[in-house]
Every structure is written in C-alpha cells, then in structure tokens.
Amino acid sequence: MTSGVRGSSCRGVAVRDREGMCIGVDGFSATECAPVNASDADAVLVTGGSRNPYWASWEFEFYKPGGPIILMTPEESNADGFTGYLTNRTVNGQIAQQEKGAAIVLEYRFFGLSNPYPDLSVASFKYHTIQQAIDDLEYLANNVVLPFPGGDKISPADAPWVLIGGSYSGALTAYTLNNKPDVFWAGYASSAVVESIVDFWQYFEPERLTMPKNCSNDIQAVIAHWDQVIASGNTTAFDELKTLFGMGGVVHPEDVVGTLRNPLWNWQELSPTSGGSVFFDFCDALEVNSAGKSAPASGWGVEHALSAWANYSSSTLPGLCSGQNIDDCLGTYNTSQSFWTDTSIDNANRSWLWIVCNQMGFLQESAPSGHPTLVSRLIQPIYDERQCQQMFPAAFSSPPVPDVEKTNNAYGGFYLKADRLFTATGLRDPWRFATVSADGIDVQSTPEQPIVESDAFHCSDLITKDGLADPTVLNVQTQGLKYIGDWLSTWEPPVVSVEVNVDLNFKHRAYPIPRR
Image (spheres, one colour):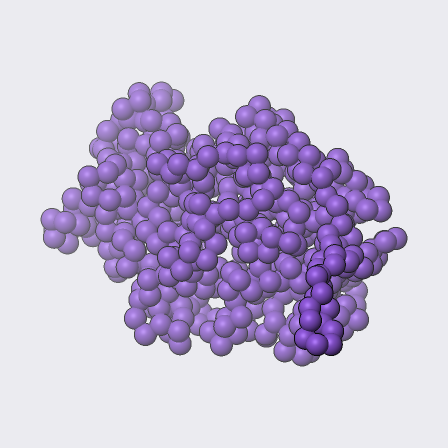
C-alpha cells in the first residue's frame, strides 16, 4: 500500500556524529531522560511517563557568548537525517557561523521517537496540532539549557533566537513568528506552505510548466488515453491496458491511475546538484527512442509514449512492491492492512496524514476540467479524503474535508504578517502554489517580510552546495544571510512591564524591568 498524498519535507543532510539531549515538556526535565540503548549515546529519549520530552541535537562550533540560537525542526519525519542542518553545509550553519551562534535541530512531536504518548492512536493525536507544535518551539526557547559556557542563559530574554524551516516547517516558522511574536527575533522560511488548500491540484503545475516539453506533452497524452478508456466503460480494454502497465491485479480503476502519479512525485527530489535522477530516467524512457534519438518538443505522441510508459511501469513496479500482491501494494481499499491499522510510533506517514486530514489538506489531484493535467481526471479530493476516514475511523465517520479555512484564518495563509521574516521560494518547486509566490497572489516583498525567489526546486536554498551550483539560489542565500544579520544587529534584551497594586486601589504607572 502506498500513500496518495506526498509530504512536503525537505531533503535531509546527515552527518555521522552528533550530540543529543531530551527537551523537557510540561514540567519534565532533561534529568528524566535515559538512553534507549546504553551503547548508543546518539539516541536519547525519555523512558516512562505519559508526557515524554523530545529529542534535540545541537552544534556550537561557532558559538560565542551572546550569540544567537538557530533553531530548526525537520517536521514530518524522524530527525535522524537532518543533523547536517547543524553544519555550514546548510543555511542554518552559515547563519551560526556568520553570527557566532549555536544551531539546534528539534524533532517535532509525534515524529521519529519524540512522542508524548506511546502510540499514534486518534486519542494520542488529540495533542498533535499545528498550534501545539508552535507551543513546543516556544517552550524549548524559554527552557532549554545547553552544555556549553553560558548555555543556561540563552532564552529569548538573554539572546536572539532565529527560527528556520523548509516546506511544512517553513510554514511553522512563519506561523510561529505570527503567533508568538515575542519569542523569535527573526525567521527564515524556505518553500513555506503557508496557505492550506484542500484540492491542491496545483502541486503538479510547476512540474508541468518547467519540465521538458516533450515529456509533459506525452504524459498528458497518455493520461488522456487512460481517461478515455475508463470513460468508455470498455472493461476489456481497461483490463488490457492495466495489464500492459504491470497492474493487472489492481482492482479499482482510481488505484490504477492514481499509481501513475508515482513518477511525477519524484520531481520533488530534484535540486540544482541532483544531476541524473529518477524523474529524468522516467522522461528518458518516454522520450528517447531505441535509436537514441530524443522526441521533439511536441513529444512522440500517444502510441509511442503509451508503450514506453508501460515498459517503464511494468519494470519498476516489482521493485516498489517487493513481492507483495499488486493490489495490496497499490490498492487503497483493504483496510485490514497494517498500513491502516498500525499505530506504533515512528510512522511519519500516519503522523503527517493526521495534519493533512484535519488542518492542511494538500490533496494532490487532477487539474480542473478544461485545464491541462498530468493526473487522471478520476483522481479527485474524495479519493484521498476516503483514505483519511480509513486511516482514522475513530475520528471520522465519513470522509472528512480538512478545515483549511480555520487554519488560514488562524495564521494568515498567503497574507500572514510577521516582523523580520525572510521567505525564500523556488520557481520549479511543486509546492510553489501554496507559498507567497503563487501565481495570482499579490503578496509584496517588504523590508520586514522580504520574499526572494530562485529558479530552483523545493527548499534548494537551504543547502549550501545548491547555491554554488545555481546563481539564483546563491542570490537567495546571500540576501537571506544579509537580512538575518541586519535584523540580529538590532536586537536588544527585551523588557517587560509590571503593574504594582498598592493601598487605596490606586495603580501606579508600570515601570519596565529586565526579565532577568
């Protein structure tokens, strides 16, 4: 069984060694943490209790007392693959190096092994919301103590904090600066999906518009052919076609054509340094004939493309399904499968779908009628909404429609306001239409909320080497570093006001006093 909703995470940048600690929440402290395995000092988690601290990793190679704290959460995944974001191979580390700061990566609640409850049940997910994730970031900033000189005086009252995120965590960065304006002094949001959208058919638009034209045209021709066969009601022709594509045993037509999105989702893995990739292997399979000649911009046409895609599909699906029954692998109707019932922790797909089904949507479907599409017209929001009900039957008695209006109203969506928030976007990012650079959205770049777009892909600007390969990415990185540096130069320790109540019910004017 494969999920029909692609997550919005950025690429991980792993390093071999790291230090880690547990971050106490709701009164728990680091002293209550214990290694999962005494021989593995890299994996530190709390044991026991119903409110578990979260795992964090840090790096203070560049830190000098008074320097900023650079925080990132890698959102919908285990944090193991993201410790490279502590180094100057990423924008996080570049900011830390430039500003003499320390970098932290925090594993987000209900992802990886950072769970306040021991399972991913609907009852546990009562505590799995966007706002609770924001509150975690605030808690960390106000309570963390790191093991270096001055590490006990790094709260927002003592040092400026910079929040960084990409994709969903980019949205969390923007949301947090909007929702908690007194905690983080500055933010860097890359490919931030700030506008929640139920029917996110536009996910495939940057791909359609910027991929090789021959490949785009032939994909559209093949998809149109599939739709014509299904609409004709000719079950014999449909059975022959799905057998040709290696999906003869897949029962439901929408599961068959839904699987045709798989090569398209590989677009999200592209970067300025990716070179050859699975996506371009797919396009080459369609557009380079047996003589080694490439198709013109119009493509080869449906006859060649159908045969070529069928060969590609039938040769790659066995590897994807790894010996599974093909309908068990690609189908979405057998709810007895562990894919639907497994509530054990460290299941990123289940944790992300809870956010998708309740708050953000982002269902990646066919384009509207009359608009060019890379995806079968059979794939509509109800296809994925049904899967929400199947994944969480205790929460939904019928297919839910994610409450994106509530989310957008809470944090601002496209029109979110925040001080000192740098936003980076990419022209070829499949998530672009959920960012402030979406076509048709009039969001202006300002000195307090600058927006800079590269020609690149999803979160490309977070990776240092991508800037070395693409000057438009380097421009984003350079401007981001400058904005963050300029904003940090204006930081001063905050003051708070208190009211003094005295006799006769007379209130004196409040006087500002330092928090510490």
